[in-house]
Image (tube, rainbow, N blue to C red; front, side, top):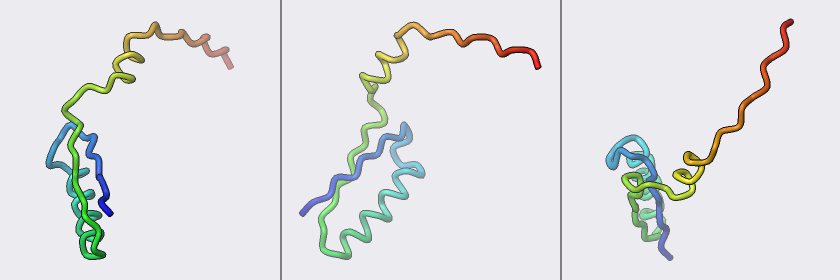
Length: 64
């Protein structure tokens, strides 16, 4: 069995990587292969589409 750990942080060797490395170490100790995949430097299509969508305007809050 192999576990794929996905790092979505824009910082390739940051805190998320450190946490994933600790998880990978425990899995490796249990005899499970791991791989950390960094995808944080790539744009996410769904997020890009959401950013391009027109924003809904909120109704003003009523005065108390």
